[in-house]
Image (cartoon, rainbow, N blue to C red; front, side, top):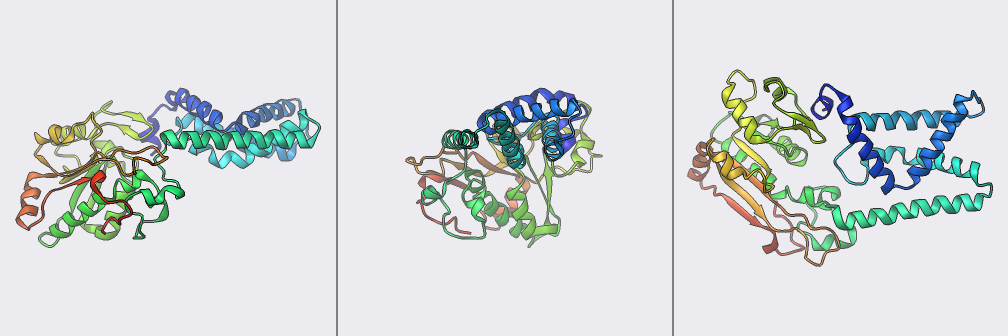
Amino acid sequence: PVYAKAGDNNLDKIGQGFSYLSISFLANPVFLVALAGALRLAFRLFKNDDSFRIQETLLLFFITYLFFILFSGGDWMLLGRFIAPLTPVACLLGFDFLQSVIKRSIVTNGILLLLLTSGVIIHVIVIKNASSGIPLWEAHKSIATQKNHLSIFERRNQEHLRDVFVIKTLDDIISLHKTHSNAPLNIASGQGGMVFFYTAVKHQKHVRFIDIHSLTDTTLIDCLPENAAGHGLHGLDININQIINILEKNPQCPVALPDIIYDLDNFTQHLPETLKKHGYTLWHNEKGLMLDKKSFSRKLYTPNVVLVKKELAKELIRNKLQPTTIRWNDLPYQKASGF
């Protein structure tokens, strides 16, 4: 994962990491005061002041972790996920700094409370306009609200709910295929996580995964020509069409051509059209929004597609399985996903 995201030269990520920290600190104002406190402590230690042993430990943890974020380039998720472990330390450093500057503890506590409150307000604003999460008070406005094998964290996030029907589609395909063949199906995607997990748990040896971004498996990296892919927050910066082209030209690569491709057709890849020349056909696609139009939260569009090799598609149709299209807006709300 480190190589896929950072490459050989971590210095390339410092600018990105600095930007990530700046935005994260602005979204969590207590960290701005904590940073001032860290600089003050560092200055005192530089002057060989030995009276700060506990603060010295906090400072070491705080600075070390900040350097990790700086050199890793940060993360793609909202509101500074990487700084979450630092929050208790930031509060202590911030409190220590304020207490040293303002002698009245009631004023110090009030300022710290104000900083934490402003952070909460900023979070609410960001969640409303950019988050894909579903607040508990709006859970009834989403599809698949009834209990099933999904955890509460998966049922309360649109990005996870978006994968519900993909998991069902892959389950149908693999279940049918393994009644006729022991050969595993190769599935390629840039969207790992939930889909790969549930599919692997149920089908195990009957499926193999190709992680396009090489966060969970490095086999693909060894097959790529030099400078064929960049490095970004999501791992290798390369698309599925490039991967297919490279695999077709390199039969010695241990990574097999995928039988199934699942990914987000995010209006730039045009996967059905792009991969048609490689012998893939559209088997499953989704359209629409998962939340009611009156929802407080940002509504996530669902451009999921599953493509299969034409030979596999013929096998599936021969055995009475048909391609599917899901229109989320047409589904009744408060209805379970059906699997």
